[in-house]
Every structure is written in structure tokens, then in C-alpha cells.
Image 1 (tube, rainbow, N blue to C red):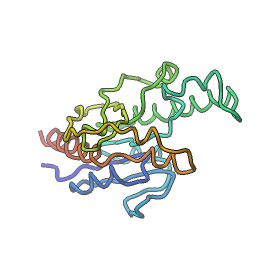
Image 2 (image 1 turned 90 degrees about the horizontal axis):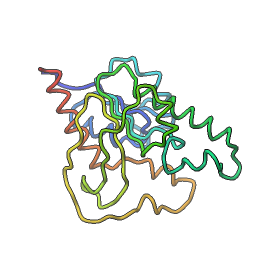
Image 3 (image 1 turned 180 degrees about the horizontal axis):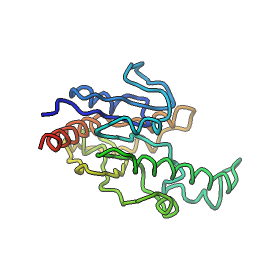
Image 4 (image 1 turned 180 degrees about the vertical axis):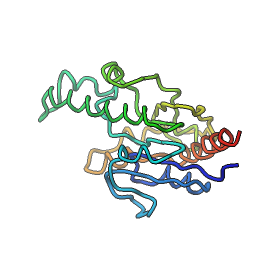
Length: 210
């Protein structure tokens, strides 16, 4: 039986998902344009798109910088925020859709991409687009908070909740504006990361051994 998976966690600088897979004995690496928060030597600073042909068993895209794809921000495409033009908004959309499309169509057997709900303009620009397999909430995995996260899955099962808890705090949504707000909003919930490592890691090992 295969002892470990080669796992690439793209668009992650916190190391939360990477470490969950590492803790279970997998050959896991994170990659982001930013340095790793924990200074790990298991972090590659650069563009994850340059690594997709390196023989990974599983690709997890933790938090792609695709804000223009989100349904909550579709209004900016017609009424851009101060200091931005419509052309800039649509250019950002094209760039975000191309990034998502590259990950979704990567030459890797098992793929999971996390992103908020998308609007129709984003969906139309993604090659081989499929609807998300599921949406999860932190409170299903031990965190008493709400933050709906959609998961696009290829050759992976939907996550099963591990620890449904009380509490429906909108902490992430209510964060005060500031220079580090985007950083805190992008951090993955450890309970969800552990479920990914347990469930997807175990599923992939069984599949590869069959």
C-alpha cells in the first residue's frame, strides 16, 4: 500500500492545510507568492501554476485570489469602486477566471478548489466548468462560526462533517477594515483542514492501493 501522497496546497501561506497533511505522514508542500507564516521549509514561494506538472497525487487550492469571481462582488463589474474603472474590473475577472481554470484543469488526478459562490460571468470563462460539489461551514468541523465555503472536487468525495458545534458567529464577515483583514479572512479553519487530510488522504490511499 502506498505510504504517502504527494500533495500540493496552492495559494496558501498559513501552512494550515499543508501541516494537516504533513501530520498524517504525507509529502505535502504549500505554495504562494508570499512567504510562509511559520517559516516552514515545506513552503515554495512562487507561482503554483509552475508546479502543476511535477507528479502530484492531490492538488488542494486553499484560497485562490479570485475576488472578482465571487457572486457577492458582481456589482463592481458595472459600478466599479472608487479609484477603479470598469475595464480594470473586467480585466481582473479574466485573470481570476484564467487562474481558477488552470487549477481546475491541472494534470493531477485529484483536485479540490475552495472559492465562494461564483457569478455567471465567471462560470462562462472557466474551461470545463462544473458546479461545486458541496459547501461547508466551520461549525460542521468544530468552529462555532459561519463562513460558507464552496468546494469544487474532482475525483474526491464530499467532506463529511466531523464535529457539529453550537455557535453561528460571523466573525470573519464582521472583521474591522484594516491592512491585515484580507490575510485573516484567507486563513483556513484547522478543523476543515484536518477533515480534508483524514478523509481525502485516506480515500486517495485506498484508491491507489486498489
